[in-house]
Length: 266
Image 1 (cartoon, rainbow, N blue to C red):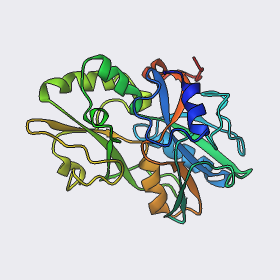
Image 2: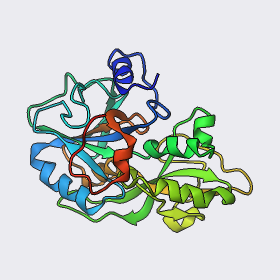
Image 3: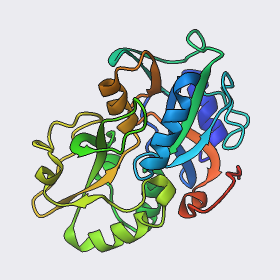
Image 4: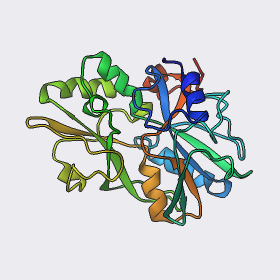
């Protein structure tokens, strides 16, 4: 079943609480970040200054849980499999919905996700180990700093996928077609260059083995705002749980055109 509306209904009904990797191929998946209205301008600027990690698809009006441009029949309070709530930099809890937490001043931001280009990689015959193993992708906090905006400052988070060296040129070319889904890799090879000490111990997601002869490839990741929220110790930030994305009605082809001025559902 490939229809985004079907999967959102499954999530809203509590029938899907797992990562969304592989769901609704051909449609944009999105990272979710929700902040109080007084912080929204600075977070918007943070996205503009860090487009690789935070490719902005849409942001909502204060208090409106409906993403009018990317999925006008959706509800951001219920249509993500799992949410995280951060209070003053600490993870205060994970929730299945936000109905009891929603406020009139909250502004939601949807950011492009690398799950979008994974379908294109698979169509090209390139295997994805985390998909084969039924795991979430591995994500790591790096020692690279994002460009700050107001209170939003902190490290870049990356996702990692291992590939045979012969596949890497195609991986770079295919993912590079999707700048609104993080685009081409930020690093290929030695994880120590990014300050990552142990690939077997990701900061988010699941460990994914890198087999002998394979090379780890790293992309900027939309979990970056969660690491930033921890460092900034903002009173409230709500996000998706890593790997538990919001599925939009927008065709993945949109992610290929960063000059597009309006997101239109398919």
